[in-house]
Image (cartoon, rainbow over all chains, first blue to last red; front, top):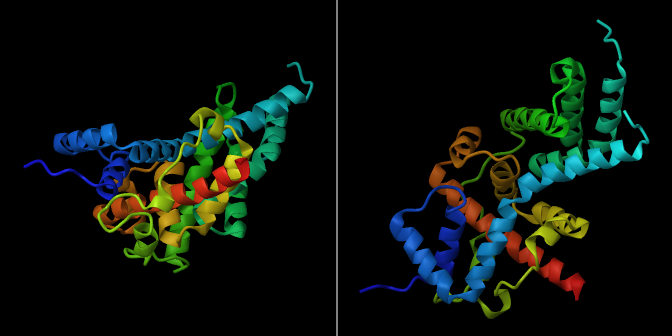
Length: 76
Length: 196
């Protein structure tokens, strides 16, 4: 019989998916759970956002530099 | 040997000075110590100036400097381990903090149910978000913060993290899962509280 996965276990898969590919079975279980659980859907989005922080940090640094060079009045 | 200072590298040096504070806060998230973070950034800046002619002309200066910094941070991290400054712990006793987010049957606890943080693009562009992120990273247990940072900020694979820390891959996943749950709870509390 198909046993419904609980939220705690679902967050484990949401996290794992960001580090390593899930198996077919895991993907399916997660998908089914997310389709039915709005809290886990939010959590999944939050994990994804945390996963973006590295790239975003790089962009922040880029922005600091761009701001400076455009503000320096140097037309080059 | 004295390098000839061209107008281009003069300007890049100004850029380095301007971006230094942000580089330091990045390094501090990983190294969890201000003095070591400042040292790593200093070394990265010196390396960038020294190797300026290897960069010359290409685009993406900041990405290049950031890449150098990541190497210096890893060096410093290895030194921290060698000196016994930090010991990766398989089991930090933070299971309780995670369990509090769930009921016994595995559903979300009423108090911990995740809410909408708003548009992700807007969130990631907010300075307030980064302040909260910084605070919540600092509040994480040591190993959790370092492993999370290696994975998400430094972009290492869990395999590489195992090599750097001596942790087993399985434990890495467990640590990352807990770190993400703790971070999301901490960020959500502050992010939604002030906005109201």
